Amino acid sequence: MTPHDTAKQKLVLDDLAEAIRKSQKGDIEKPRKSYILAFVRWNHIHVGAQNPSKADLVDALITWRQNNVGIPLKVPPMLPDPIYDYPMPGDKEVICNKFVLGEVVKDMKRTTLPTWISLPPQNLGAKKNGKLSADHWCTACMVSLVITLIQLWSSNTGDLDAGKRLENFMALVEAVHYAMKRMTLEKSIAIYEEEMCRYLNSLVELFGIAVVVPNHPFMRLNMNSKIGELEATFMRMFCHGANLKAMLYERVNTAVGTEKVLMETIMTAFDKAFPTVFRGSLSKDLLGLGQDGMEETLSQWIPNKGELNLNPGVYAALSELLNATEPSPSFNRRVQDVDRLVFHGIEFSNVKASKGNAQILFRSSQPGVGDNITMVGQIDSIFLHQCHIPPSTKGIVEHFLVVRKYRDFNAEEASRDWYQKYPRAGAWMCHDSFKDKVWVIKKDNLIAHVATCLMKVAEGCWKVIVSLDRS
Image (cartoon, rainbow, N blue to C red):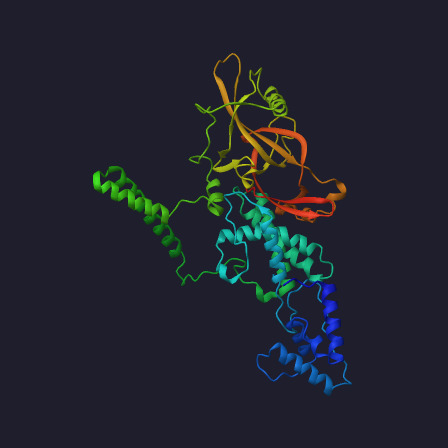
């Protein structure tokens, strides 16, 4: 079933009205049942059956028309949004209706995300998905809905409320964006309060004061008037689980013979049932604890691993970088290629290993050249390189990343970037093509991953970028 835009609605409504006036049963039966039911409701026509079939509705319309030739036929109005089924008078408005969710799902299929993000179901909104997890809601609202709703509602000039709904939703997104940051600054607090006030005020304007509750928009928990006990229960259960795991691991290490085999079998089943998965909000929370104890790829030469020569363009960029940052370095073209590295607990990889983990925000590693400018690009390759800094004879091994920067919009194209109206949400558009210059950066100049969504336009292909930086 395809959605009907305003033009298609007009065509169906006009044809159906003409068929009803002429009592042409065959033509009345052609449209979707919801259109026929709309004519019945708008003209207050009585239908005997409690749950009328399409045939019942057609018969009722023909009978009414034949008995009321002199009464003008009321034609339901066209709607500004595309629809699958025509809504009935008095029906409660569904904001994220089938059409909107359908567009969200289409964009989700074109969206590239890093592997640490928890992906919401690809058929978002379907009943069989059950309840979404907190991480699913976070990704859906902070990434997927941002990508789709800004496009859908910014361009919808026929619906006066669409712009108000978008302003309301984006105020909440921008407030949550600052609430999720790993560092709390006075500026962030002020922005959060400003956006949350804007969200609540627009919420009352759209839906009335009745929708606002004291702890809105957070879920209310039944605490049974026992404040503080729920937190203690969470902590106690967490400690029980941690102690059990530690006890089992200790027993595995000290057991011998048959007991050791048995304990290893138990631990294998335990790890499978309760895996340690550093994804979604857990990954963001761990980043907030700092770098101590976090997994990190060491920059050291890999024994018995083959070496290769850098191509001239990458070697020139590496030479420019090293000469600008190191005193009289001695180096050559020989490097070791690696697929991925872990930096601050997050895995980055080249585009062949994982396209999602290769989409990044970065800064130039060369002083004075884009060092204060945030850029978006794709990691083409990662390599280990060894150089010598006189008078030391010991080689310094470092990871370097070869990055291609996406082409920015020109001034005319930027005027069509609806996402820039909401800079605090961290979303914007660029071309789905790269600049000629090759960037070679150190891993310290990685900022964060980004989500990207491909958009086809008349000029070619553009990309929506959503920053996943929470620093």
